[in-house]
Image 1 (cartoon, rainbow, N blue to C red):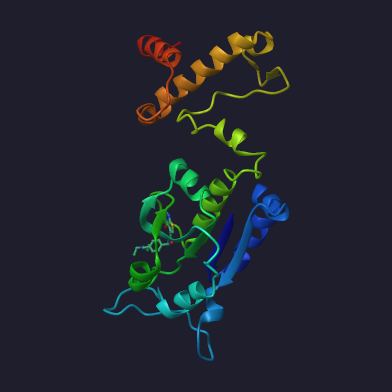
Image 2: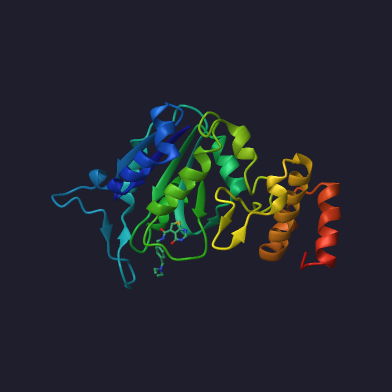
Length: 245
Ligand code: 9D3
């Protein structure tokens, strides 16, 4: 899997790439990340990459030329490749999209900044526009990190394989059950007795029930798309009748 990140601020990525799982995946050669500085494709003595909006208004817009030339500098001849523009107007990124992107050989991420990118880039070069959620960021760089983090851990060989990624919360569409470690008592709160019992079947049912309860209480919207077994449906029925349990 290869990511090409087009940005005006490549330095923002350095600690992210050094300190995360992604950094390890890069070292292991499973993921390749190339940072392309858009500014180095700008022209003139001042390498200007942004300009005032036609029609007037606040802020600056990223010029199409530098982004277009940066994109042309990226080798896109080696397999399935997708050009993604990170923008507040995009489709909201989620785990389903993360799986789809993980099946690409190459994802080119264009990070906008200022008020955004000249519309003609979107129209002529972009395959997919992505937002990471309904809040205002100052640019696409942090969004690109979010996308690379979520996608790369699904690539076989990154996290210890697809298997562990599949076991995660959101893969069955439910929230995770609560986790505990030592000590057994912390600030007067005890670890649920059942987790110390050694009865693996009881623990499994307790955890599944806790997952379903949390999802019902906090994210009932997730239950509509969740992969539920007959056992889950039975547990949910009980929880809906006795929500205090
Ligand atoms: C406050 C400025 N806005 C109103 C005129 C428009 C605006 C322009 C550029 C708002 C945010 C941005 C920068 N954001 C991104 O590039 C971005 C983003 C985001 O802000 N939220 C969620 N996902 C993404 S992906 C890229």
